[in-house]
Image (tube, rainbow, N blue to C red; front, side, top):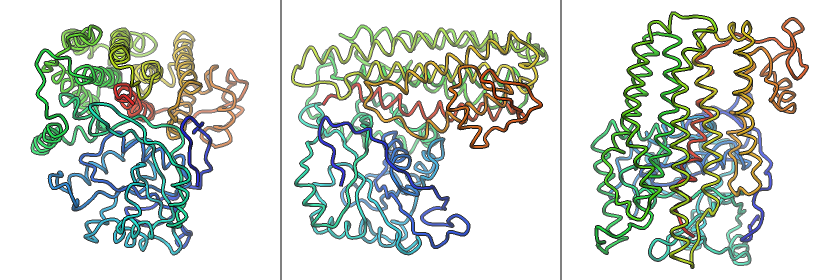
Length: 572
């Protein structure tokens, strides 16, 4: 049993087992390994709806614990909650949430509906879908210790080998959050009585819960994976039910009626910070799609851009309709003003891009690439302004509560600095994506024939490497970097090589060596020498594949950025 003490270093690396590929709830295993026992992490919950906290926990478990796969099991019929969204819709949202980058090896099972029961009966049936001697680990929060020795808990624990436990914040009086103390001797004795192994999530995950969603109902979509928020936007009936549920819960938790002139503790500023994060992401995505459209000029590229613009407009519409009381929060008010100004300049820039698009699509070579990116660069400074305003707003929130309540402190005291580092790292990837997309399908040949563009690309990659290095080497960080992100970043580097025909000079030599050994890139004496002295060849470059690869890393980083923004506004 690994029980962390409060204040202990929880960032020790964990040994990982080889991953297999299986279908929903125990489908086909890897060829030739049908009888190999497996280790399955089972993550049950109402998922009403699934939010970013669930996604982070599932991905972190898969990447840091010795499990072959993680299976999400939505509750079919909850013993207490009777107002859940329809089961089929909750399952669909779970599938959508886990379809993104970094969620490989995480699946959704409808075993509870098939069995008709939860916990013990469900686990027993689930185990039968896997090879003999397979083991189940129950993924849960640390409140599991409050109920596992009750009759139903004991029956449930008999079906699992052990628990994978996430330390989490619990809501106390008022709006205070706290981390439950760990009694090692009590937990060890409990584990012995139940014959359980217990393992904790190493590295603290940001706090994310439905409580935080209730604090910012005007920007609820920012707490959800984008695929889930888009699904809900297409189902007004589900949104209405969700809002009704959240409002009812909020009334139970806060029966007191506040005066309209009172500063709403965390609520208004929290919503503003989350909307800032969401607006930045939408602008980054639209910037990249605009680059593809200007360089390719295809009907599909135009359709993709129209969809991206619609998503941006949805976020901006929520911002425009926001009427939060920001009295006492000057930086939050300044952020709101910046956000509400986006529509004005964005409308103008879209009009300019549409007017110039026919000529820019026809313009080839270095000149075409340069002129297309010149339109996209307008996004850069404006995103920087929003990023800075968002960080200042979050810092203001924390400073305000540190000054008014000396008995509590931020759950993540360095949240503004962490948020800045992750946001800047994410933006550096976004700029690389936009620049390459502006080059279009012929970027592969253009960059080989234009020293100026090759040099500019190399500088953009160097800036990206610098920001990512700062992010990953932050000694003050208590947050575990998802292993999935490291793997996707390696794919981005391989994509850079496929574009340039060599590694950028800023690419770390250990990564160069690792990619060469992994056969993601191959050496050839005919194609020239990289800045690292490695002779390389390159496969055909596909700008749409490059967009997809970089978007995978950016989308995963968005999950962490949103969680950090929320964590900074929770107090422990």
